[in-house]
Length: 451
Image (cartoon, rainbow, N blue to C red):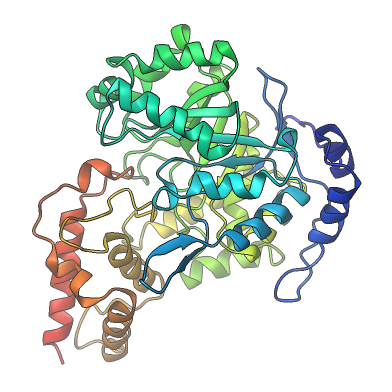
């Protein structure tokens, strides 16, 4: 791995114009965790250089899809702005300077909430990334309206990193309809030329045919960056759900296009691993968290500009800051160890749901992510009851059913799925959601019958 720039926190704040007050925040904000354990980083945040603009980007990027939410008296969910402010202040104080949002995140509230927190800091001290999320209406008029609305929501007159959102989801023809046939790529290239977009790229969730086609537009578009899903499970296409992170990363690197990494934890599944996997990772590095292995893997590759994490809780933010302050790149032997670990994890039949909620709302009221995540949780914790005659069956049966009713209201459970398949095209992971829901509903019915 080539050694990239690691500027001091004081120098970073000096360059960005934050000044002494913010340095005091940085000095005090990275010393202790919420649980009283020391989370002081071993050094300064690692930065990577954008080869096009010279931006010094923190290797840890903040994904703003999972801001903490609160419910009002009418059960409506809104972003907890005070909590967001605390998280953003702590992140900036510890050197994080890349914030990734979208018009559709947090039920449409993420851009405004992110801006409200960031606007309390100098504009030069952070980079904003947002997206053209024209999933349901990709007319040129609506797409331009969405683009311009982002400037208003984000309280800015330029966007540092602008993405075509979820390219490949729905196939190649869907990409062409959303971005080529309506002239939006040409429009955004002109916006970049005018300086309202500093870097133009896309996030990718599709197959090789679509990846190669869109990357092939580089001669025309000159993509400044590409956001891909990369983690130690998806590195090998035979383990992943059709993804080939190694191929995508190498294709980008060969063209000198920086990669931005999403889903380094596979929606949290690489931090909530089965007990024997957690023991394996902890035995190798007792001081590091389970999640730190995944973040070190993603950050080890030199053409990665930043690694996104949707950090809802302060303890997650603190742990990731510690991992990347500074990044200790994996050795070849440690990478092989992770690949062996991934092979062991394939023995557990979890559903590759990342809790992105793109499948929602379900027209029949099913809480699809909650159903799938409860199933995965029970798989990881050994609470799947396979045989009514086996030891521990009754305990596992009760744990699944009681936990299911607590996690998902009965009217929103899997047995209400009629197989309409409206959710399938929206799933970035390519999950056959009705098939999985029917499988879970059948399993639950079997548990209820076997008293």
